[in-house]
Length: 217
Length: 313
Image (cartoon, rainbow over all chains, first blue to last red; front, side, top):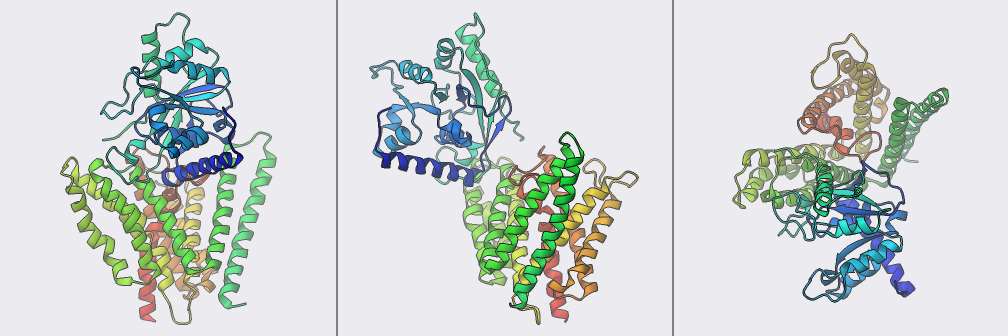
């Protein structure tokens, strides 16, 4: 990361705290460390994606010292659209920005991710690729998770389910509802010795889906 | 020092001493066991939460009317959020629920603050009752319509309407009782919570018949002990109320009885939704609704009876 102005760094810290406070005040979001503890190991948190608030939600429930070493992987076209977004993405969340448009990109998106993992950072990723706006609870995973597992076998891959956020702000609604949300961290999934890409990805997706709380009619 | 201030301090001192005694008992139990005992730890977490609540409540009483209304408005918001998180709803209810949180709830507590008694009494049970289903029906979805609108209304009745009767006790300006409504709130909360507590620790003893065997370990014996304990505490605290000693005891017993009813009813709702607690927000106690269920049910009865008493004297 390039060095930034101290004032900008300070503004980023204040904004970060404000986001955490806001998320807690509205949704009382809390972490359910079901399969792993909140320990500062290097991890990739892979989560379901229904709303733009998903990433700030996971980020908010991480203990402060873990938040400092955890970076979300996010779409460059979204986070570089305006100065404000660039500040939020770059300075507040310190996102690893990747270009998700295969026809326009010049560099390999895995390169930035590999670099961040080699630097020892933990990551937050959404392996469905896009926000899930279907009735399905989870879309098929893209290969990124497999590539990370293969290149960085020491990193824990933690399934992370964000519950209820979809009712807080369904697509097309303007006002968020203050309903309680929960971020559930499951047991890490490891790549087996000779596991195929597809088999691993569907196993990881199943591990994530297993965390979904039961919904009553 | 004004008499009200004196009574607030005196009451805070009494409750503080009781909590101190309980803390010492808990620490001695802790010291007796070599390993941390789960039951003792739960007890101690609860004591810690009570300390926080007593300090917060005392400061609120000292800060005045607006703080009391604000405190219960915040509690109401948290309780409504817990209720709606688990209620039946679809996307068609989005606007109704947003109105409930951002408009109806603040309005009800503004009625309390500005003493608008007529609207306070009919706003939610009549006007909102008729209006909110209309907002939901506009979206055109009739899927489980009756359950959805009923549960939305139920949430408002419990978490906003009934709960707002607690700060509304400040209205009851009984003769010679000017500005002491806050102490009446403290009285209600203390006797109801004490009744619950005694019921909880006495009611688990074997040999008593359960009231609703499949739902709750609450027994007839425990309930009666709870009501008696509330009455005794009510008698001991009659000096902060406008009532005489016997009337204070009777009011406390009645509040505790209706509180225990609320406890059972909300437990049935939790069971239906497969919940143990409504949330995790109050350490050792669960959520706001878990903590307040009995006071919510006791408040309207207590409010109306106190008003009757006032009309009669």
